[in-house]
Amino acid sequence: MNKKVSVIMPFYNGKEWLEEALDSVLAQTYTNMEVLLVNDGSLEDITDIVRKYKGKIRYFEKENGGVSTARNLGMKEAKGDYIAFMDSDDYWMPEKTAKQVAFMEERNIVWSHTGFVYWYYEEGREVRVHNNKNYGEVHEAVKIHFQVSTPSVMISRTILDDHTDFIFPVEFRTGQDSAFYRMLSKYYQLGFIEEPLMKVRIRGDNSGRRAMVRLHMSSQLNERRIVGSDGFDVEDFFVRTMIRYNAWGYKMISKLKFSDTIKEKLAKAYWAPAFIFERVYSKKYQSKTEIEEKYILRYDS
Image (cartoon, rainbow, N blue to C red; front, top):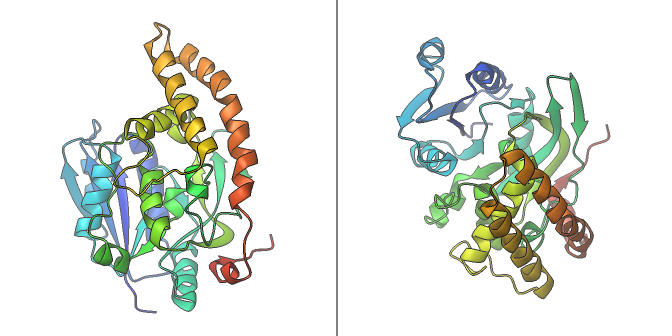
Protein backbone atom coordinates (compact mmCIF):
# COMPACT_ATOMS: atom_id res chain seq x y z
CA MET A 1 0.00 0.00 0.00
CA ASN A 2 1.77 3.15 -1.20
CA LYS A 3 -0.64 5.92 -0.18
CA LYS A 4 1.14 8.59 1.84
CA VAL A 5 -0.30 9.75 5.18
CA SER A 6 0.37 13.24 6.56
CA VAL A 7 0.01 13.47 10.35
CA ILE A 8 -0.71 16.98 11.65
CA MET A 9 0.20 17.63 15.28
CA PRO A 10 -0.39 21.11 16.74
CA PHE A 11 1.59 21.99 19.86
CA TYR A 12 0.94 24.59 22.53
CA ASN A 13 2.50 23.74 25.90
CA GLY A 14 2.55 20.34 27.60
CA LYS A 15 6.12 19.53 26.58
CA GLU A 16 6.31 16.62 29.00
CA TRP A 17 3.96 14.54 26.81
CA LEU A 18 5.14 15.64 23.36
CA GLU A 19 7.85 13.02 22.90
CA GLU A 20 5.54 10.18 23.89
CA ALA A 21 2.97 11.37 21.32
CA LEU A 22 5.62 11.71 18.60
CA ASP A 23 7.08 8.30 19.38
CA SER A 24 3.67 6.64 19.09
CA VAL A 25 3.24 8.13 15.61
CA LEU A 26 6.77 7.29 14.46
CA ALA A 27 6.34 3.71 15.73
CA GLN A 28 3.44 3.01 13.35
CA THR A 29 3.68 -0.19 11.36
CA TYR A 30 2.61 1.85 8.33
CA THR A 31 5.76 3.47 6.99
CA ASN A 32 4.76 5.87 4.19
CA MET A 33 4.12 8.82 6.48
CA GLU A 34 5.19 12.36 7.22
CA VAL A 35 4.73 14.11 10.57
CA LEU A 36 4.04 17.84 10.64
CA LEU A 37 4.63 19.37 14.08
CA VAL A 38 3.14 22.89 14.23
CA ASN A 39 4.28 25.03 17.13
CA ASP A 40 1.39 27.42 17.75
CA GLY A 41 3.43 30.06 19.58
CA SER A 42 4.04 27.87 22.62
CA LEU A 43 5.42 29.46 25.78
CA GLU A 44 7.65 26.41 26.23
CA ASP A 45 10.98 25.96 24.49
CA ILE A 46 11.00 22.70 22.53
CA THR A 47 14.26 23.29 20.66
CA ASP A 48 15.78 20.15 22.20
CA ILE A 49 12.87 17.99 21.05
CA VAL A 50 12.91 19.44 17.53
CA ARG A 51 16.64 18.74 17.38
CA LYS A 52 16.14 15.17 18.60
CA TYR A 53 13.58 14.42 15.87
CA LYS A 54 15.40 16.25 13.06
CA GLY A 55 14.95 14.35 9.82
CA LYS A 56 11.94 12.47 11.21
CA ILE A 57 9.43 15.33 11.29
CA ARG A 58 8.64 18.53 9.43
CA TYR A 59 8.61 21.42 11.89
CA PHE A 60 6.70 24.71 11.62
CA GLU A 61 6.55 27.71 13.95
CA LYS A 62 3.85 30.37 13.99
CA GLU A 63 2.40 33.03 16.24
CA ASN A 64 -0.26 31.80 18.61
CA GLY A 65 -3.62 31.76 16.91
CA GLY A 66 -5.34 28.71 18.31
CA VAL A 67 -5.44 25.05 17.35
CA SER A 68 -7.55 25.72 14.24
CA THR A 69 -4.87 27.91 12.70
CA ALA A 70 -2.24 25.27 13.47
CA ARG A 71 -4.26 22.47 11.86
CA ASN A 72 -5.11 24.63 8.87
CA LEU A 73 -1.42 25.38 8.32
CA GLY A 74 -0.67 21.68 8.56
CA MET A 75 -3.34 20.83 5.99
CA LYS A 76 -1.96 23.49 3.65
CA GLU A 77 1.57 22.07 3.91
CA ALA A 78 0.63 18.38 3.93
CA LYS A 79 1.78 16.28 0.97
CA GLY A 80 -0.08 13.06 1.74
CA ASP A 81 -2.95 11.26 0.06
CA TYR A 82 -4.53 11.00 3.50
CA ILE A 83 -4.43 13.49 6.36
CA ALA A 84 -4.57 12.32 9.97
CA PHE A 85 -4.86 14.51 13.05
CA MET A 86 -2.98 13.97 16.29
CA ASP A 87 -2.77 15.91 19.56
CA SER A 88 0.54 16.45 21.28
CA ASP A 89 -0.47 14.64 24.49
CA ASP A 90 -2.29 11.58 23.11
CA TYR A 91 -1.13 8.15 21.99
CA TRP A 92 -1.61 5.93 18.93
CA MET A 93 -1.53 2.14 18.93
CA PRO A 94 1.13 0.81 16.49
CA GLU A 95 -1.32 -0.52 13.87
CA LYS A 96 -3.70 2.43 13.92
CA THR A 97 -2.61 3.96 10.62
CA ALA A 98 -2.23 0.66 8.72
CA LYS A 99 -5.69 -0.54 9.74
CA GLN A 100 -7.34 2.79 8.99
CA VAL A 101 -5.79 3.21 5.53
CA ALA A 102 -6.65 -0.39 4.60
CA PHE A 103 -10.24 0.09 5.77
CA MET A 104 -10.71 3.31 3.80
CA GLU A 105 -9.08 1.93 0.66
CA GLU A 106 -11.00 -1.34 0.65
CA ARG A 107 -14.39 0.31 1.20
CA ASN A 108 -13.85 3.53 -0.72
CA ILE A 109 -14.39 5.74 2.34
CA VAL A 110 -13.08 9.31 2.39
CA TRP A 111 -13.15 10.05 6.12
CA SER A 112 -13.14 7.80 9.13
CA HIS A 113 -12.39 7.53 12.82
CA THR A 114 -11.57 4.75 15.27
CA GLY A 115 -12.51 3.59 18.72
CA PHE A 116 -10.55 5.08 21.61
CA VAL A 117 -10.10 4.98 25.36
CA TYR A 118 -9.92 7.71 27.96
CA TRP A 119 -6.45 7.37 29.46
CA TYR A 120 -6.25 8.37 33.11
CA TYR A 121 -2.48 8.14 33.02
CA GLU A 122 -1.90 9.38 36.58
CA GLU A 123 -4.12 6.58 37.90
CA GLY A 124 -2.85 3.98 35.44
CA ARG A 125 -6.30 3.10 34.10
CA GLU A 126 -8.17 3.25 30.81
CA VAL A 127 -11.89 3.51 30.07
CA ARG A 128 -13.17 2.44 26.68
CA VAL A 129 -15.58 4.83 24.98
CA HIS A 130 -18.52 3.10 23.33
CA ASN A 131 -19.18 5.34 20.34
CA ASN A 132 -20.30 2.65 17.90
CA LYS A 133 -23.32 4.62 16.61
CA ASN A 134 -21.19 7.28 14.96
CA TYR A 135 -20.82 6.04 11.41
CA GLY A 136 -22.54 6.31 8.05
CA GLU A 137 -24.96 9.23 7.81
CA VAL A 138 -24.13 11.46 10.79
CA HIS A 139 -25.06 14.96 9.64
CA GLU A 140 -27.95 15.26 12.07
CA ALA A 141 -26.27 13.40 14.92
CA VAL A 142 -23.22 15.69 14.83
CA LYS A 143 -25.48 18.59 15.81
CA ILE A 144 -26.55 16.89 19.02
CA HIS A 145 -24.21 14.29 20.50
CA PHE A 146 -21.14 13.12 18.61
CA GLN A 147 -18.36 11.11 20.20
CA VAL A 148 -15.47 11.37 17.78
CA SER A 149 -11.93 11.95 18.98
CA THR A 150 -10.03 14.16 16.54
CA PRO A 151 -6.72 12.25 16.95
CA SER A 152 -8.54 9.19 15.58
CA VAL A 153 -9.79 10.98 12.44
CA MET A 154 -8.32 10.49 8.97
CA ILE A 155 -9.55 12.19 5.81
CA SER A 156 -8.76 11.75 2.13
CA ARG A 157 -6.92 14.54 0.33
CA THR A 158 -9.74 14.46 -2.25
CA ILE A 159 -12.07 16.15 0.27
CA LEU A 160 -9.83 19.21 0.48
CA ASP A 161 -9.31 19.23 -3.29
CA ASP A 162 -13.07 19.20 -3.89
CA HIS A 163 -13.91 21.66 -1.09
CA THR A 164 -11.18 24.29 -0.83
CA ASP A 165 -13.21 26.14 1.82
CA PHE A 166 -13.10 23.22 4.27
CA ILE A 167 -10.91 24.40 7.13
CA PHE A 168 -11.12 24.40 10.91
CA PRO A 169 -12.97 27.65 11.76
CA VAL A 170 -10.48 30.08 13.26
CA GLU A 171 -13.17 32.19 14.93
CA PHE A 172 -13.99 29.27 17.24
CA ARG A 173 -11.63 28.94 20.21
CA THR A 174 -13.51 25.80 21.26
CA GLY A 175 -15.65 23.36 19.32
CA GLN A 176 -13.62 23.78 16.12
CA ASP A 177 -13.54 20.04 15.55
CA SER A 178 -17.32 19.68 15.64
CA ALA A 179 -17.73 22.55 13.19
CA PHE A 180 -15.26 20.87 10.81
CA TYR A 181 -17.10 17.56 11.10
CA ARG A 182 -20.37 19.27 10.22
CA MET A 183 -18.83 20.41 6.95
CA LEU A 184 -17.65 16.90 6.10
CA SER A 185 -20.84 15.14 7.19
CA LYS A 186 -22.97 17.29 4.90
CA TYR A 187 -21.36 15.62 1.88
CA TYR A 188 -19.74 12.37 3.02
CA GLN A 189 -20.66 9.37 5.11
CA LEU A 190 -18.34 8.53 7.98
CA GLY A 191 -16.39 5.30 8.38
CA PHE A 192 -15.68 3.78 11.78
CA ILE A 193 -13.29 1.12 13.07
CA GLU A 194 -14.68 -0.10 16.37
CA GLU A 195 -11.32 -1.25 17.71
CA PRO A 196 -9.83 1.28 20.17
CA LEU A 197 -6.67 2.31 18.33
CA MET A 198 -5.72 5.41 20.34
CA LYS A 199 -5.69 6.86 23.83
CA VAL A 200 -6.99 10.28 24.84
CA ARG A 201 -4.98 11.53 27.79
CA ILE A 202 -7.25 12.86 30.52
CA ARG A 203 -5.90 15.70 32.61
CA GLY A 204 -7.48 18.54 34.54
CA ASP A 205 -7.87 20.96 31.65
CA ASN A 206 -9.17 18.66 28.93
CA SER A 207 -11.62 21.02 27.24
CA GLY A 208 -13.91 18.28 25.93
CA ARG A 209 -14.86 17.40 29.50
CA ARG A 210 -15.59 20.91 30.83
CA ALA A 211 -19.17 22.13 31.12
CA MET A 212 -18.32 25.80 30.51
CA VAL A 213 -16.67 24.83 27.24
CA ARG A 214 -19.74 22.87 26.16
CA LEU A 215 -21.99 25.83 26.94
CA HIS A 216 -19.59 28.14 25.11
CA MET A 217 -19.81 25.96 22.00
CA SER A 218 -23.57 26.47 21.93
CA SER A 219 -23.07 30.19 22.49
CA GLN A 220 -20.84 30.39 19.42
CA LEU A 221 -23.39 28.55 17.31
CA ASN A 222 -26.18 30.77 18.56
CA GLU A 223 -24.19 33.91 17.73
CA ARG A 224 -23.90 32.63 14.16
CA ARG A 225 -27.71 32.41 14.21
CA ILE A 226 -27.32 28.64 14.06
CA VAL A 227 -26.99 28.73 10.27
CA GLY A 228 -23.46 29.44 9.11
CA SER A 229 -20.88 28.81 6.43
CA ASP A 230 -20.17 25.43 7.96
CA GLY A 231 -23.55 24.16 6.79
CA PHE A 232 -24.94 23.87 10.31
CA ASP A 233 -28.56 24.32 9.30
CA VAL A 234 -30.67 23.33 12.31
CA GLU A 235 -34.25 22.72 11.33
CA ASP A 236 -35.14 20.65 14.39
CA PHE A 237 -37.03 22.88 16.86
CA PHE A 238 -35.88 20.93 19.92
CA VAL A 239 -32.21 21.07 18.91
CA ARG A 240 -32.44 24.81 18.26
CA THR A 241 -34.04 25.23 21.67
CA MET A 242 -31.27 23.22 23.36
CA ILE A 243 -28.57 25.32 21.69
CA ARG A 244 -30.23 28.56 22.80
CA TYR A 245 -30.74 27.23 26.32
CA ASN A 246 -27.01 26.46 26.59
CA ALA A 247 -26.04 29.78 25.03
CA TRP A 248 -28.13 31.72 27.55
CA GLY A 249 -26.57 29.77 30.42
CA TYR A 250 -23.06 30.52 29.21
CA LYS A 251 -23.85 34.22 28.90
CA MET A 252 -25.24 34.42 32.42
CA ILE A 253 -22.63 32.27 34.18
CA SER A 254 -19.65 33.90 32.46
CA LYS A 255 -20.75 37.29 33.81
CA LEU A 256 -20.69 36.13 37.44
CA LYS A 257 -17.84 37.37 39.61
CA PHE A 258 -16.91 33.89 40.84
CA SER A 259 -13.83 31.77 40.46
CA ASP A 260 -13.51 29.44 37.46
CA THR A 261 -14.02 26.48 39.79
CA ILE A 262 -17.36 27.81 41.03
CA LYS A 263 -18.43 28.73 37.51
CA GLU A 264 -17.65 25.22 36.35
CA LYS A 265 -19.80 23.71 39.09
CA LEU A 266 -22.68 26.02 38.19
CA ALA A 267 -22.26 25.17 34.52
CA LYS A 268 -22.40 21.43 35.24
CA ALA A 269 -25.64 21.86 37.14
CA TYR A 270 -27.12 24.09 34.45
CA TRP A 271 -26.01 21.80 31.63
CA ALA A 272 -27.49 18.64 33.22
CA PRO A 273 -30.89 18.91 31.45
CA ALA A 274 -29.19 19.50 28.09
CA PHE A 275 -26.88 16.56 28.76
CA ILE A 276 -29.85 14.25 29.34
CA PHE A 277 -31.61 15.66 26.29
CA GLU A 278 -28.56 15.00 24.08
CA ARG A 279 -28.28 11.36 25.16
CA VAL A 280 -31.99 10.64 24.76
CA TYR A 281 -32.82 12.68 21.68
CA SER A 282 -29.71 11.66 19.73
CA LYS A 283 -31.10 8.12 19.51
CA LYS A 284 -33.55 9.51 16.96
CA TYR A 285 -30.66 9.80 14.51
CA GLN A 286 -28.64 6.75 15.52
CA SER A 287 -30.61 3.97 13.82
CA LYS A 288 -28.61 2.55 10.91
CA THR A 289 -29.61 1.03 7.59
CA GLU A 290 -28.20 -2.14 6.09
CA ILE A 291 -26.49 -0.04 3.42
CA GLU A 292 -24.56 1.87 6.08
CA GLU A 293 -22.93 -1.33 7.37
CA LYS A 294 -20.13 -0.90 4.84
CA TYR A 295 -19.02 2.09 6.95
CA ILE A 296 -18.23 0.12 10.10
CA LEU A 297 -15.55 -2.46 10.88
CA ARG A 298 -16.72 -4.46 13.88
CA TYR A 299 -14.43 -5.46 16.71
CA ASP A 300 -14.87 -8.20 19.31
CA SER A 301 -12.73 -7.36 22.30
